[in-house]
Image (cartoon, rainbow, N blue to C red; front, side, top):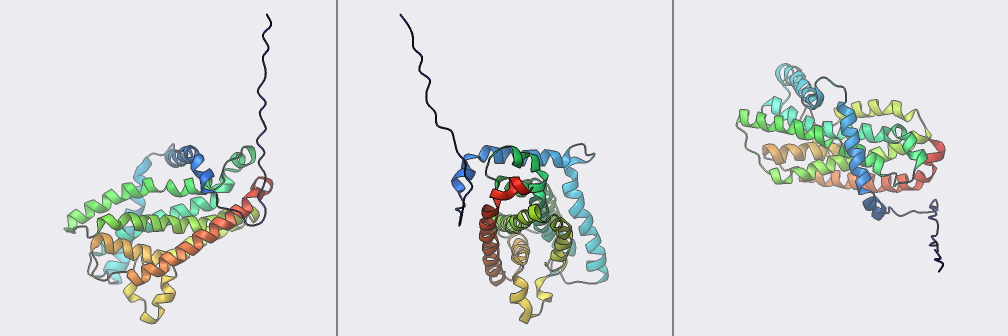
Length: 280
């Protein structure tokens, strides 16, 4: 008796570059969610690998800046702090700013940093800048614990703690939207990376971190609020420290700007990702 073994006929998987307007394809992103997790965890481990203080840097950096600001802006320059102790006024703004700045910088460099991975295998390229953005949440968590301790020291009770995740998400989405534009441009034009530190530094000074929005003239408020970090920082202070004035007008403009940056960045990234492996 002879046994015949029939081989199953399998059709090869063909991956074609999209043409014209492309969809965002969030379904593919969900299918590769485990890769997103591992890349995020890799970025976290690499950040603190072979460091002496490890995760303590997430606390030391904003604390040091807060002390410098408290001396020069709070004590010497007498910058108003909306009735709050200046150290906690500055530190509460440095947390969302540090999260945004880290996510923006890392996502902008993410494609170049993962050059070998991009040229060898297929996966949704959006995972790379997204993992770089999410990795900053660990630093934020450590620094936020210190902020809660400072609030206990100054006797400040959290106002709307439940709404804080919204402002954290808004900061991450703003960083992702800008990071998608810069990371895509960075693949084509390598001198883009030299503009990122300058952009971040300028962005810091036009955000209400060391000073309150009340110092900005009323006639300039709308133009000023086009900076999405204005709504994030002011909203973060309002939700956590209980400022009397709600940042709703500023927040609405910031949400609109973040939405525009994110949608345009996603479409531009998806349209150009078919060339990443060839150009990078």
